[in-house]
Image (cartoon, rainbow, N blue to C red; front, side):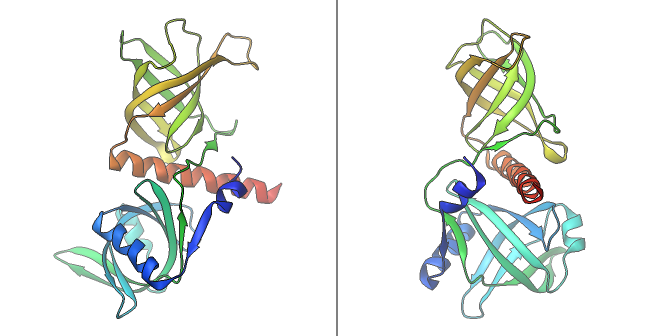
Length: 243
């Protein structure tokens, strides 16, 4: 799937009642949100604390890690995106004021005019360029065999990887992902199931191209993965714009 195809599947919600409904869902479900400040590339984590439609304001929690709080200023433009029931949901806002309670900062931000909402749960897949090497380390649950290879692509649903040939690895095998490397030195661990295995046609070393599907991810791991996909996606867009 190309990024332009992904964009075509996104609906822009502007109708006030539905817009507020989405925001209140993000709040009530305590959805972890990824935040990018102005035109910076780094993502931080926050949560929506309160929606105040009368004042046309929202309250969001202190950015994590703390360096995000230190960079944020009144008037900063925030690009915010989160997974609402597994569906990417994003909007842009500006910081109106900052405050703190019991030593923890929070921010008043403008109510957004629109929300980008992907109606269908279709996982956007990003491909890992040859200039970036991300490793994946697996343990086959049945016999504890350890496999290590290179990540080829990734989405919120699963990943593709190149592994050394192994005649014991079969489709539908369950594996423990001991470590899956992500940009910015982030790593997640989880469970997955092998969905397809095929010899890599471009290799002469008998390597295997596998496709794996994640078991349901813990919310923190899902958020970490989501931020990594956003980072990879932005890098792809920059490369396409320079081509």
